[in-house]
Length: 361
Image 1 (cartoon, one colour):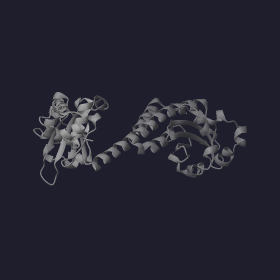
Image 2 (cartoon, helix red, strand yellow):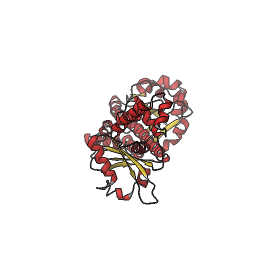
Image 3 (cartoon, helix red, strand yellow):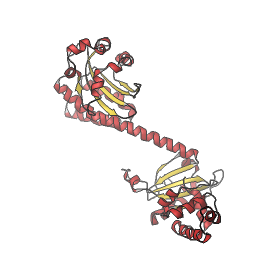
Image 4 (cartoon, helix red, strand yellow):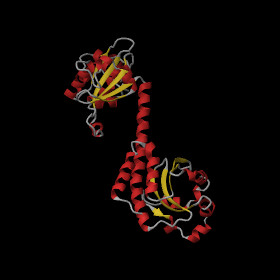
């Protein structure tokens, strides 16, 4: 098996491309299978209860063997051995199980032989609580066992393939989490938009896309002179959250908008030019929200007592009611309120209530 360096490089690059295009993994595995002179490649993911959750077969003529494998999976000595080995380590069965073992094994005699399969180089590619993923490259009946050189080459493939499989699984999990989060925000009538320092839009969810007035947007960015761009400039100027009330023309409802500086960790994840530096959160104008005290501490630097007061005010409590509820004097409550107004930069109590109503819960 002689593979040119350029051919190998192209194959590896194409394999990694499947991380962002998971649907192309079967075709890339088929190319690898042919390049490595294997009869069939089978990539298999098993849940703890034995359910087959991932199944990629490069040759349709072996489909019956996959369907029948469910009846023999617990008897497969190769899979059991691969599961004890390091992730991505390739092993060939001829080195593990001799002819005498094969002649007495129900798995070899009742499963492999009837389906025309014999030798395999395989590996465990991924392990988690949800599934364990294996891959096997096979030589069918009449072919020789894999050689040391072939095992070494398959070992290189499996190391790359284990990285690709893990990345695909994690990417898909992240995609599902983002989709679920967007659905949750939309169901709560909350929109999210991320913009860079120049107001270019990096991302926005469907609610924001549908409810941000067109007058506030301009060619994929916030419009110069608009209320949203003014909010972004204020946030970038002092690094604090700021809010505003958008009152677009009907039928769009009023929207409370709060702009926050993006956390450094969020910016560090972005490798391309449009890095979100400011996050804008949109809430329906008639929505009353009460952000948690821990959120208020993080966003505005309030003390625990100040954040508790702000939380209660946002929930509709008056200063007098708050003082009575927590057994403090009204004078103490008003002192705390002045500190809250200063830290949130709200000129009056009414402005503070409006700000609190605009915050995401």
